[in-house]
Amino acid sequence: MIELLKYCVPALCVLLATWLVMHKFYKSEEEKRLWELKRLSQKEISPLRMRAYERLALLLERTTPEHLLIELNVGEMTILQVQQHIMRTIRMEYEHNLSQQVYVSDEVWQLILSARDQMVAFVNSMAQQIPPESSALDYAKVLITAYGANGKTANDQAIQALRDEARALL
Image 1: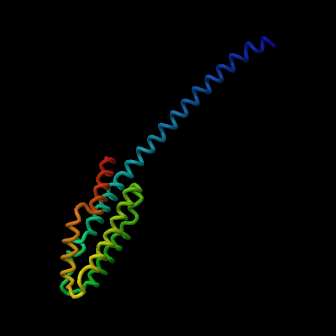
Image 2: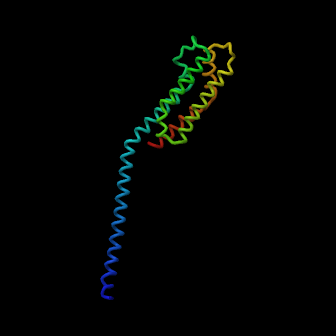
Image 3: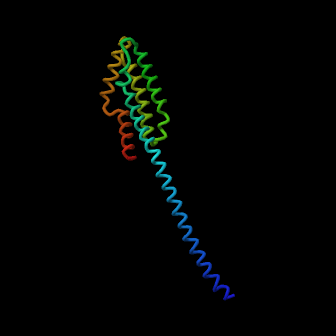
């Protein structure tokens, strides 16, 4: 019996040491594979994320009164037609860029949604504040002037958050 223990105890120690070394080796190799996979996926995802930041910044720029009104011939439109056109354009711009939310943080996406909602509310409130006998050109002037007087707008804040997040990615 003692003779058997003389051989079994060292054999078990060698087996345990071998198992520990192999376990550590396999764990290290698994971590290397995961790191390499992550590095390769970052090569693919980073350009997509940068394009998403660009598209969302463009979206925020396109949904400001200056850009929304630039191509309209407001002289031939009513206030209601201008307001409806702006609402339709904002909705279309957001729907077109909706898929970009998967590339930005939840906080940035919430800022973008807030910017959209505030712009819609701003356009509607300006339409209600302008006298009914005013022209669409007067409405357009009021929109641009009042928006410019707001200081740092929700669109500006969302663009800044996009910039900050994009810089962190670089």
